[in-house]
Image (cartoon, rainbow, N blue to C red):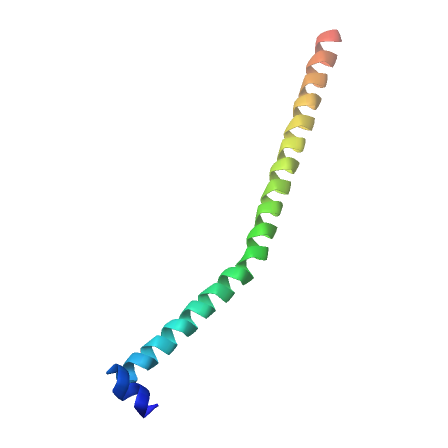
Length: 74
């Protein structure tokens, strides 16, 4: 290692910072990869909730229309 330090002129801190940077980058990539399934599951649950609320709204509208029709006929 000393030959490399003498040859390039870099000090110990340079290589420590370089190693730290590589590790931080690798950890960030792993965190990104790990968060992808969570984001997909969240998107699916939001879509299902919207579909359920739309279904509930449609059934409520149909019930109110049926009640209006039955009151007007009676």
